[in-house]
Every structure is written in structure tokens, then in C-alpha cells.
Length: 461
Image 1 (spheres, rainbow, N blue to C red):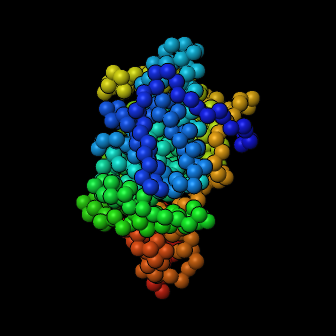
Image 2: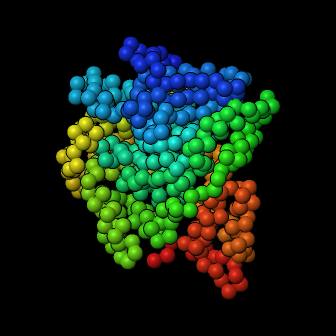
Image 3: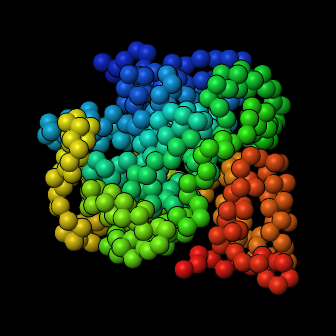
């Protein structure tokens, strides 16, 4: 898909837009975005996106705007997602309503892409519920701060949709097959586990966020300082506010469970995943049975599309991702499962399984799935250009080490477990959680030979 396209027109506020659903503020060199719909858990709508995009473009040009911080109003949520209940209602109003829903997704993805390619430091406070549309506003930021109140999830397969807002890009780039697991099951990562999994780059207590904002506003950068240098200064500043990681929240996606996730969710189709889960025995059997029950309640179409998305998204750049997701979302607006799922789960609050169409995995053919990924002859979504595209995040070094980094050092050979752990602790300047993360990966994926050197053997059993 070609990434060359004219920039879209700047969105303008429309009649009926709420005047104060987003609040902007200036604190010296910091520019803040506050999502201000606390009664709706700060769910994102078109009115908010139409305000944020022009402000980001304005700050992009301003030499006085050094750091952008986005947060949610109130203690419960950063942003609980897009306002999908309104979109489901539009879709019951015929072709014009469906077109309105598609336009919303186009606008949302333009905003998310702008964030993903933004040329200035952008910091997301993932304090509270961070799901769906809220993930799009935060997951592509170079700095993503989790707190004890963070609740991360991509719950789209629950409502007959697919993990969007750039999930095709960020989920497959998590360690192993965690991304496919989160995409299909909607599993929640609470508090520090969003940090351990790589969803967040930092972890601090929520009570420190106000003081952190004030401290960041005091930072002064040389005009010629590149973004890497600026991010390094911000990174060090955030770590000043760390009080250690909570001891009562062990790493969730670790040990036998993590091995089982990779074993079961590495497969090419959902039917194989289900068969793998049925084959689990021992300490992970109970987890596998619960996961099977979870998958039995999800939209069969959504699961098959989401898994295909996880496979293809590994090779997409960030612009490809949002353009292709726009076509997938548009196709879902024409599919009955979206209205069915949103109505059942978010409007009627039913505890039963929605009446999916088709209701069984075997009734969703490869051709049905193909139809969500067809782009031939379709106009690409125009995107705002901020910085160059890439096929991975440039600032991954701000987070905990990824499994591929650890594997690379092990494969160099000749190192003990202690030396490998110490090397990563030094590389990350003593960042909290580095030692625990590296030790977990080495214990799960390696053996020690007779010379005391670590040897990578991969997922065992």
C-alpha cells in the first residue's frame, strides 16, 4: 500500500461538540492535554479528536512547546476507549449512519498516527483504565507511565470488533506471543504488570504525577538538542520519582504461564490455538480451561480477523498500520457483530454470550477473513505527516529489555547469568524491574552449561 498521500484538511469543531471535553494548559515548556469526560471514563469521541489534532500541530511548530503530556480527568480512567455505543447507534440508522461511524475511525486513526510519529517528547499518563481508544492515545508514545491504578486491555473481540488504534503494530512487537494472547482474550494487565509486559515504559505512584508534571515543566533544552537527548533527560527525571516496584504484585506473564502462552498462541489459526489449549496439562491446565471459556464467548469473526492482523502487522510500518486498520474498521461497521456486541455488552449489559453471526469458528471461512484485508481499489486514509515511518518503535530502549535483546546477548556466548543481568542493569542505568525481567527470561529460556555459561534453549516442553 502506498504511503504517499496528501495531508487531510485540519479538522474543525462541529455543532454539538462539547466545549470542555478536552482541556489544554501551558506550564512553562510543558503543554498538557486533559481528557475531561470523567463520568464517561474519558471515552474518546470525535469532538475530542477535533480539538486535539490542531493543538498538536500547533505545538509541533512552536519552539516554546518542549514536552506534551496527556492525562485523564479523575482517578478512575485515563481513557476507557472510544465512544462505541454512539457508533453502534449510528450503524442502526442506515448507510448515512455507517458512513458517520467510518468517518470517526478515520479521524481517530489520524490522531493516533500523529502521536505515533510526533517529533517532540510526548508523555502519556496511563493512570487508571486504559483501553481501546485510550491505548491509541498512549501506546505509541515514547514515554508511557503506568501507576498502581493502571488497567490495560484491548477488549474489542468482546464487542464484535478487532484490536485497532494501531494494535496491529504494537501488540505483535511485544515479547513472544503475548500480543496475540491479549488480542484474542482481552486479558487485563493491572498496575505494574503493564510495565513488566512492555506496555508502559515507566512505573510510578499516581500520587507523584502532579509533582512530576511540575518538574518536567522546569526542564530546559538547548535549541539544537535532538529528541533522543531530550527523552534521556525526561527518562532520568521520571526515575527521580520512582519509589520501587510493588512487592505484592508479582510478574503475571512469567514462568510456566508465559511458556504456555507462547506454546498455545503461536499458531496460525484460532482452531489450532484452541486445540493447543485443550492439550495443556499440569500447572497451566486451569488457566487453559479458563482461556477456552473466554474464547468461546468472543466473536468468531473478530478472533479470526484479530489473529490474521497479528501475523500481518509484524511487517507493516506505522502508516500502513493505520491505513489498513481503517479498512478493517470500515468493514466491521458493515458487519452485524459490532452492533450485536456493543448492544449486548455495553448498552444492555447482558451477562450472556451475544448472538454472533456466524456463531461458530468453523462457519467463518478464509474468504470471510480475507474480505477485511482487501485494499485493492480503495482510497488510502490520508494522514498527517509528522516524522518518518518505521517498522519498529525508535525508543524501545526507554522500556524494560525485550526478550530479543536478551537472547542476542546470550547468543554471543561466554557469559554467566550474573554477567548478563548486570550488563542490562548497567545499560538501563539501574532502571527498576530490569533485574527481575532479565532473570525471568533467562530462567525460562536458558540453561547453564558445565562452564557456568548461559545457553539459549528456547521454550521447553
